[in-house]
Length: 348
Image (cartoon, rainbow, N blue to C red; front, side, top):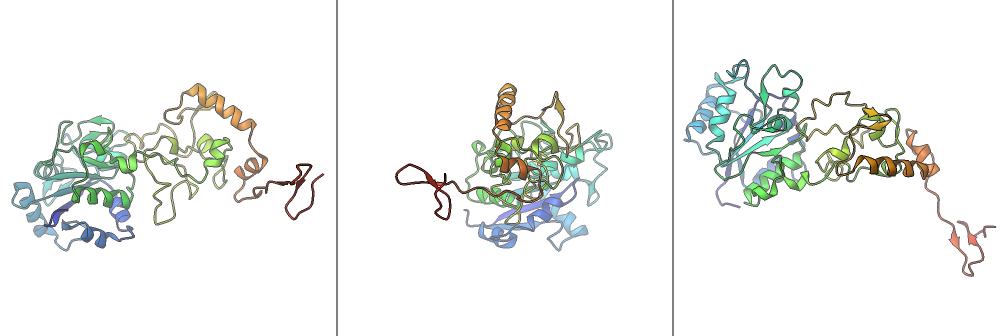
């Protein structure tokens, strides 16, 4: 960690502000303590700083001219380029936000896209994209965005895409900590610029419905305990994130709350082509299969798994609570002639 504080500037662009709200839920340590621990000073944040109006505009002007040093530029929300590339859909202190972001990004030591909107366009770029929204270095899955595919910050890195809708507070603070410690290099980012410490996992990992997934014992309606993939749109097997290992607010995740994973860390999640809570199928087979699994293997394994589903799992998959508890396996008798059930009675 450097001895002088790293100066972080945070700009909110075309989004809902949900990533800031998520960040405020950081715990162990909380946001203020985490930033102090990692030696990061908030130069300006629209929701956390007192400066506003002309005072904030002057600070942004100074950063754009290089008079105010910015070590870390965080952008939350998509960049709005419309109408017709003018950027006038979103002005910040009277200046198109896209212009301010681009100028400051080219002077900042590190540039961090906070959330899927800032990384890839996200919800703001969904559908017909009348806003002409894009991410900092991507337009959905295509490299480019506002800064261009070849952009590198003064530290020599591309935009660091902390994707998620909203993004997990732990992903943001760990990324900032790695930057502060000088431990985040190009090799620590995946092919879409996402830090590997969380993007090398799938949301499926650690899901508490995995036993139902293994036997393809599927929930058919919301509120049931079974796997959400086959009928209710869950894409946890296709989402790069550690949501079920790094829980939200200490104990939660989408699937633990009964909601399907919608792949919100992926560039195209906002335009799935179907309802978020339904699974499109062809000939009864889900279209979106787990990553790295050939279709023929999935079909074969799913058929075998369904045939071998224990009654306990089959019943509980369609219930809103555990109706059948796991059985205790009978103990073998010492002479091997019979087995004893719990309580000591010899089984016949």
